[in-house]
Length: 333
Image (cartoon, rainbow, N blue to C red; front, side):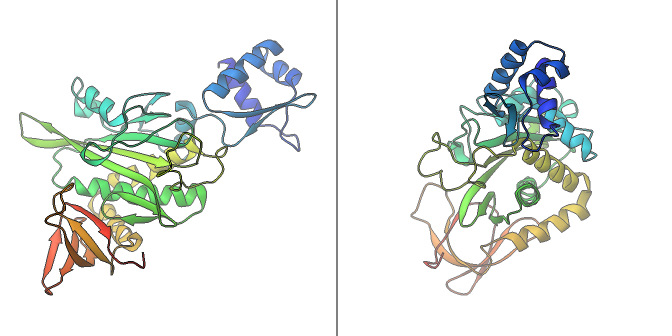
């Protein structure tokens, strides 16, 4: 075990009433010098760990500690999830892009249930190449490769991922999350998460054999977030982001749904529908995203088991949507 891990473990298991552990006690328990302890603390801080130092009192953890592959894996194992491969990056361009790069040189079977996790993305993206701002210490950014064989309805991966994110947020932060069809998660009227699912084809069979499920969640505000994003976060405490816990929770919940087969996915779609805030609402539909000349107004009636949106047009006719972009039309929202 490295000195960093030893220091983190001692701080995490502190029995003192205020959580502080003296530098001397840390050095003795870790079997190193106090200078080594100080260097380890500085290294942990650079990795995102919140560690407070007070003269004559020592060190204590603030917030959720370090965000790392080791901590995510530990939480997953404690939850009984042991068939996941984590690849962790402090900084990367895009976890979805990295998953694609690796799928180009490895088989789908090799990368099945591999999760690419980043503390920061420099080129995070959403649907249609839109930029997804992904600064360090404010959120989690991950992509899960799932390769069950032939994939006939990629939209279900996005929908089940949305349910998994809602469940994980509720479990870790105790707040209720809602879904805007098809890939956005909202809390208190503000978007906190986007999901981008991309399929990878087998050129020999012509079938989609792998889904890359990209998930970006804004957890806490900090000065790096742009003005139009700053309101859409889960927690107001930037020192208590619980990034490892939320990452593990999302992975665990999503794999539980997908590994459960058709019946599990069907139940998750019932939950997806119950968490939707569009049903019964008047919405604006853009059939071709980025163009407004063919937009129209309609009312949302239902969401099918295949994650399609059932709407009623102004002339009373019904239509089922499997793509496009929607926004709330009602001024009440």
